[in-house]
Image 1 (cartoon, rainbow, N blue to C red):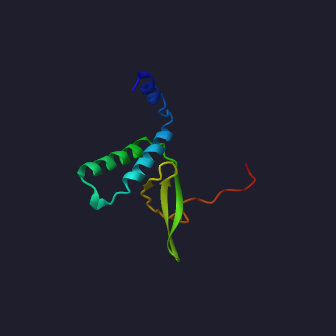
Image 2: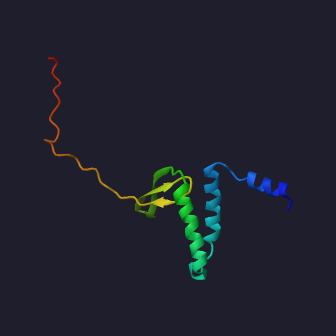
Image 3: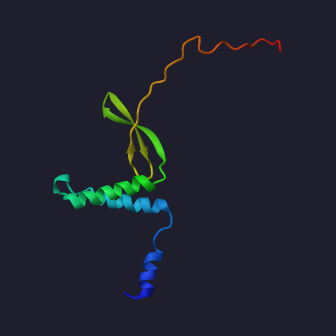
Amino acid sequence: MDPIHVTKMYTDIPKDQNANINEMYKVLSILSSVLLKDRNHDYTHIVNCVEEYITTYCEHNLVYDLIDITPDSSKTIKYCTKCYRTFAFNYCPIVSPPNDAFPPLDVSSDN
């Protein structure tokens, strides 16, 4: 391959990190199509490296969404809209403070 062609190949690499993440996500999708039972140690290592790259370099845009579990129940999930990784979502119910936690506001007009 002539030097001009090689230089052109490397100048075509996207400078935008999001474009890199999109490409790595495509790679992960292809690699993930191989069944777990058909993967050897080296293959699994490559998959793990790609997953780590995506997790490390994606500028995550996290959103919460409800997914249906059954016709009568759903579950809240947290995922990134850029790399599609899911993240742990710990549900913490909002607990009302006791009545005496906040004194009533003085709304009298006397200042």
